[in-house]
Amino acid sequence: MRLRNIPGAEAALREYPTFVDNPLSYKGNWKERFGNNNPIHVEIGCGKGRFINTLAERHPDINFIAVELKAEVVLRAVQRTEYKAVPNLAFVQFDASKLTDLFADHEISRIYLNFSDPWPKTRHAKRRLTYASFLNTYRQVLVADGEIHMKTDNEKLFEFSLNQFAAERFQMRNITFDLHQSKLAADNVMTEYEERFSSRGQRIYRVEASCVI
Ligand code: SAM
Image 1 (cartoon, rainbow, N blue to C red):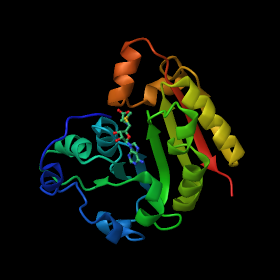
Image 2: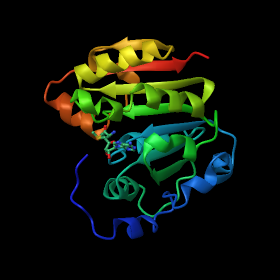
Image 3: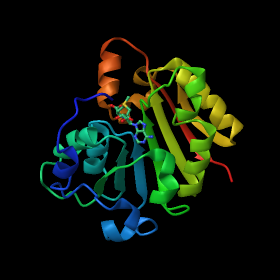
Image 4: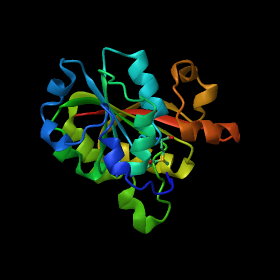
């Protein structure tokens, strides 16, 4: 996601109670941050945060952590919470390739990958968030029956991801090549990118993959 550079974005983030300034200090202790033992669901690349904010409102019994690389983008996402603390929601500016620095083994229950950058060039395949090295990182931080829920508008990224899940022994279910026309549409929470792509008539692909240990 490209947003113009916002001078002072990193300092501005610290004003928001939902932003976690020292996330590495919570590795293995995220339950302390939330003050309960509820399951933890993580969205990687939350963009402007519509999806995770909606989920946090709908599911007070689940703790949500949004991981986003760019400060100016996280700022847009935390601004949705205004200056209020949301007990089950935390935002982190962090690179998902280092997820094992952020979470202890088997600390989280679910990962959402929504409209991840497709990196279409073959030489950039390792940057795709469903590349094998990322999947193995996810397996490490997910609980034994943990799940990855992925949505994309990009057919090639979807096909690549299904192959990566299969090769890395993830079990797949609820695969759809047209989410909005499927039975899964009723519970679907749209992201900003999803809204934009589907309004242009593009199909949305979705899969759930669980770890097979
Ligand atoms: N999920 C949002 C949506 O559907 O509207 C945003 C999609 S946008 C195409 C992808 C987002 O992933 C960008 O905001 C980008 O900064 C973030 N991102 C890309 N690589 C990342 C990484 N390694 N770690 C964390 N976030 C990442």
